[in-house]
Each structure stands twice: as C-alpha cells, then as structure tokens.
Amino acid sequence: MRLIVGHILLIAILLGCNSAFAQGISFYNDYLGNIWVFDGNNTKQIDHQPAKEYGVGNNSFVYVDNSGGLKIYHNNYLHNASSFVSDYVVTDNLISFTMNTQLKVFDDGNFHTLCASMAKYWASDDVVVWYDDMQHLLMAYWNGNKYTLDDVLSAEAPSFVKVGKNIAVFIDVNGNLNAFYLGEIEQIIYGKNLGNVEVGRDIVAFVDASTGSFNAFYMNEFVALEDFVPTSFKCGDKMIAYVDASSYLKVFEGFQTRTISFDEPDFYEITDGIMVFGVQNYFKAYVNGKVYTLESFIPEKYQINNHSVAYLDQMGNLKYFDGTKTETISYEKVTDFELTGDAVRYAFGVKSESVYYEGKTYKND
Image 1 (cartoon, rainbow, N blue to C red):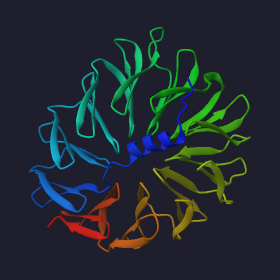
Image 2 (cartoon, rainbow, N blue to C red):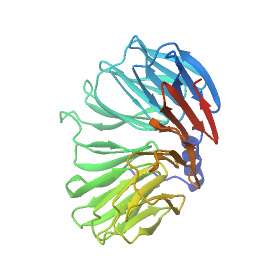
Image 3 (cartoon, rainbow, N blue to C red):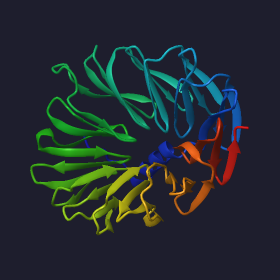
C-alpha cells in the first residue's frame, strides 16, 4: 500500500529519527588494560580488563567483557545486556543481539525482545528485520514497534531481504519486491524484473531488467534516473552514487542528478553522507554538494563515517577531513586508527592511544 504523508509530517519523522544522538563516542585502553569510554569530551573508566570484542555506534559503545557478557555504554550508563551473547550487530542507533535463537534490540536505553525463535535477521541503524521460523513470518522493528512484513507459511524462508539505514526491501511470497519504510509497505517492482538493488537512508536504487532502466524510490517517490543500466551503483544517506553507461561518476541527491567526474573513477565508496573516490590518482571527497581534493595519491588505508574521512598520508601522518577542511592530527607513527562517529581513535608507540574529537586530542596517559 502507498504511504501518503504530508511533507511537514514526513520531515518531522525523519528529523526525529536522525537528530537525537551524539557523534563523539569512542574508547581507549590505558597502560593497565582498563577500558575508558570517551563520550563527547568526557572520559570514564568502565572496566578493568580489555574487551574481547567491541563495536561503536553514534551513541553507544558495546563490548563483550572478559566473562563473555555483553555490555552497552549509552547515555552515561553501563548496561549489562546479557550474561552471554551468540551474535550482535552494532549500528549508529540500534544494537541487535541474539542469545541462541532469541533476538533482542537495544534502542535509546531500552531493551526489546523481538523474537524467541529467530532463524535469521538483518539489522541497520533504525530497522531490524527477522524471520520467525516458528510462526513463519517475516517481521520488522522500527521506531519502537513491530510490524508483520510477509506471511511465508508456504515457503521455507524469505528469498531476498536487504536493509538500509531506515528502510528495508524484501521479495514477498507473490514474487514482488517491496520496501518497508516509515512503518508502511510499498511495492517497488515485480521480482522477476528486478536487476540489482541497493538500499541507503530514505532511498532505494534498483534496475528494472525488463526495460534496462535505472530507478530510485526516494522519500516515497519513484524517480527515473537513467535509460541504461549503470556499470555500478551504491547508496548512502538520501543519495545514490553510480557510474553510468558512459563511465561518468554521478550522484543523485535531493531529486537532482549531477556529474561528479567525466573521468571513470578508479574506485568510489559511499557511507552516510559522504563519498570518497579516486580519479587519476587523486583522492577526493564529495560531501554536501561539493567536491574536495584531499590528496594527490590514494591512501592505502582510510575510513569514512558521517561526513568525515580519516587516513594516513604518504609520510604516515594521520589526517582528518571534517567535511570542509583537512588537518593533520598526529605526526606519530600510527599503528592503527578507527573513525567512529566524528571521533578518531588511534594507537602509536607502546600501548599509547589517543582520541581526537572537535579539534582536541585526549590521551590515555
């Protein structure tokens, strides 16, 4: 069924889902192995032993402690999520985890049990989809509620599911590709006519194999992008990056398509609201409608998140692009680094670790 929502209400829902989080969560270990969480210019010791595993979102630090328990630091509080965990997925807003076949989600300080007999699940920033093999239902969680997507009693399991940040696509028992978006289901295309499909935030990009055309489902609207199938395409937050049939790099954003490069890119990658790409050995970034040249070489290692890029230059210095400007944040010989939200955690020397955030460096000494 078609979702009909006024623009004001739609914008309010989207802002409500996207704005209530911090972007300065990270952590480091001190010289004794204690875990210190970094939370928007503040540090706090939360454990006296190193984590076995960990994950970081925009508003939570998640780790498996020395005894195998799952712990979640969120909003200045450390939650003991479970005494053991079979699997977990950390995204910017949600933490999904399983205990055998039981599926749970941690959402803004609250735990929700989603399913007692989960066969498979797919998790993203705002949406969790799972197959309940006891009831033979494909289900979804969004905005604090559970939804039935499809009754697959006649089939063994869903044939196709893919999730984006706040939208999921699936092929139902009738063979149709559907989008689950803002609590409603919209039919996209008949499954046998579907070519490739990618999902981001508020957007689905797909190829109609019956016509050879490239299309988007964006903010509840269908948009024809190209008459020919692109060489490749990827989705981010409210945008699609793709290489068209003429090898041009293009971006669809805000109901407009623009050519970013007339030269075929060596590579391109899109995450959240930023795209990085290489053209003739130049390392570039596209963010907020602008193209920035970061380096005249392609870094061997880089990470992108939100609107930022962290990477090592040719001298081994750690650099950070915040969406408008680039600065060197460490001249030390960095052995490892990680960009989480807008915070950069990096290691150097002997057990030395630091976090860079909003122009300041916080050390573990």
